[in-house]
Length: 117
Image (tube, rainbow, N blue to C red; front, side, top):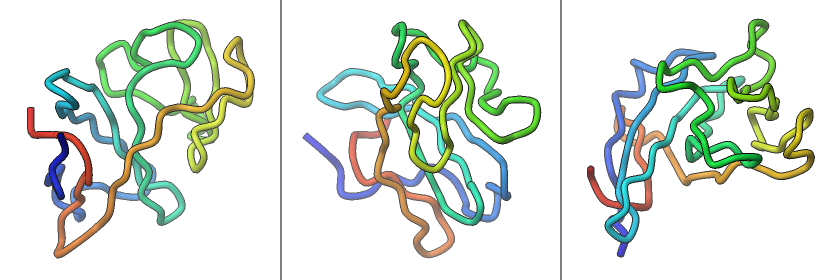
């Protein structure tokens, strides 16, 4: 069961290169996720490494490598291309993060699936 739209945060609060952690429910199960603004484009992914079922960020909201070129799994160093979510380095080679549908509308960033958590 999905919700047409779920407000995540004000669009003005997510600057270029920022990430924001949020949660929603899918079929009654809590899903941890994050949204980022990458080169002017909004992207959102489930916060779940494709190598092992662990969060990318250790729960501290850090997703970028030190140069802000890739999202990184801090458990084992897998690096993901931010615009596509594809693993470009590490043990999950070629797998992609689970992407989520987000859009900016009326000054807010919306998730178009799930239920409020």
